[in-house]
Every structure is written in structure tokens, then in C-alpha cells.
Image 1 (cartoon, rainbow, N blue to C red):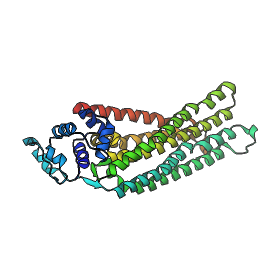
Image 2 (image 1 turned 90 degrees about the horizontal axis):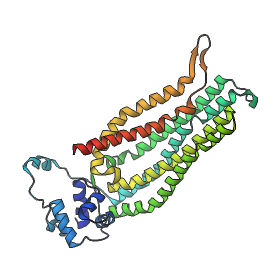
Image 3 (image 1 turned 60 degrees about the vertical axis):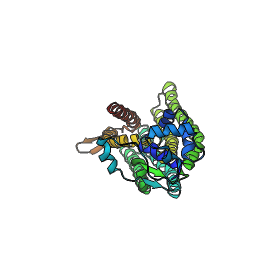
Image 4 (image 1 turned 90 degrees about the vertical axis):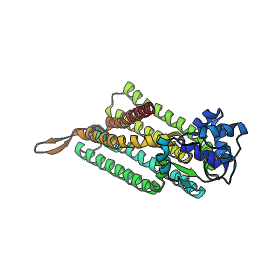
Length: 349
């Protein structure tokens, strides 16, 4: 085991990110990254600092053949924990490259599935508006328009769910990268760091474009509300809004999935040892939270159907044009919940 691997292993065992170790050594994160990627060697004073910080001998750090960690005496109360430590799984260069390739391939497909979900009510909204305005020449009853639109919606959602299940299954073998601590074989950290730095400029441009689309998405609806009272024009602008939002979300999802592939390997950002433990708690909360959000969304969306005696279910106008707001609001609230969990976890420490 070489010095680069020892620094990385010791940092991860202490649950520190590269930024945290850099702060303790009074160096930049880039310096720590280069040490772990075997692209440079720390100066002697930094090695002495690391020896004190990690509680290991300088011989252990400097001698490549020294595979046994020469730790300072372990407190009696911690001996049981130390004895139970298991060797961390090691990720090879081949496996790392396969994971990055699979994640990048899945990013576009999963983003497309999200787009299908967002656009699913577009046809329903448009047909509902046309059915309520006979002057546009659409000879379809409101019930028929609602039925056709709902069928298209369900087909698009079903296709999206199929995409999610298929690609999540493909990525299932790499779940340990998100949930467990692991070690990287020589050279993997350097490869991942270079890849992250290479994609960062493109990710930044996509985020800027996505945010711009989100801001501009409301412009057609605002202008239509000012200059016309035509209900169909307003509904068409709602569809335009959904299309622009869908495009923005596509950019966000692809950016996030491509970037997180490298962060998972480097165990940075949301994937440090501490954050992995916290993510398990947030995941348990999410398992309850998101089904409730889905139930609220469906209840609100389908509330446009009422039962009329002698006539069965009657279409009175769906709420798809407004019920979509549940998802961004729910996302913001869930972000707040995750933030509260982080604060609580820090206070406990």
C-alpha cells in the first residue's frame, strides 16, 4: 500500500471529506486530492501533521511495505468497536469506469422518464380546453376529451415507471457506493477527480440554462393573463409552462446524475461517511413522505370527476393544470426536512 492509498483510507475511516482534512492541515482541497491520486507527495511537515491527526506512526505513512497501521493506543472503551471493524470493499479501476459509464447512460433515460411524468397532463389540459370551447371546431364531448387525455396521461406515466424500474435495476449492483464506505484501488481517485473537473464546466452551463428556463416558463402565462381572457389560450400557456419546466428538469437530472457518479467514487459531497449514515435516516423518512405526496397529488388531480346519479362518472374539469405544483412544493419541503435532520445530527455530535 502506497502513501496515497494510506492517506485516503485514513481519511475515510475518520469520516472526513477532503475539504475537512485540508482544513485540518491548512492546505487546499486540491492538494489533498493530488496526494490521494498519487499526483504529488505531501511535504515532510504535512506528513508529521497527518501522523498526529490520524494517530499513526510516520513509518506507517512513509514505508510502502508497511501494511499494518501503527495506531496510538486505543481507549479501553473503544477496543470492542475496533475489533469489530471489517475490511472495506475495494473498488477497481475497471469497476469504477463501468459504474461511471452505466450512470451516465442511465442519466438521460431517467431524465426522459421524469419529463414524461411532467408532460403527462399536457394533452388532457389541451383537450379539456378545446372541448369547453366549441367554436374551435372540436366535436368531442367533455367526457370523451377527458377520457382520451387521461388515457394518454396514464400511458406516459406507465412508460416513465417502466423506465425508472429498468434503469434502477441496472444500477442496483452499484448501490453500495451510495450506502457503504469503501476503498479505491490505486489511480481510481485521480481518474475520478479528473473526470469531475472535466464535466464541471458543462454541468454549470446546464444548470444556468435550466434555471433560466424555469424563470422564463411563467412568462407566456403572465402575458396571456394580461392581454387575453381566452381560456384556451391560458390553458395552452400552461402547457408551454410544463414543456419549459420539463426541459429544465431534464437538464437538472442529467447534470446531477453525471456529477454524483464521480462524487460517489470520491465519497465527497452527499456521499461522505457521515452523510451516508444521515442519508439512511432521510431515506426512511422519504419512504413515508413521498407516498403521501403521491396520494395527495392523485386526490387533487382526480377531484375533477364526480358521480352523477343515472349518468355515472361525469367529467367536470380536471385539476391537472394546477395539481403539478404539488411536486416542486413537496421537493422544497423535503429539502427542508433533510436540512433539519442534518442539524439534529450535528447537534447530537
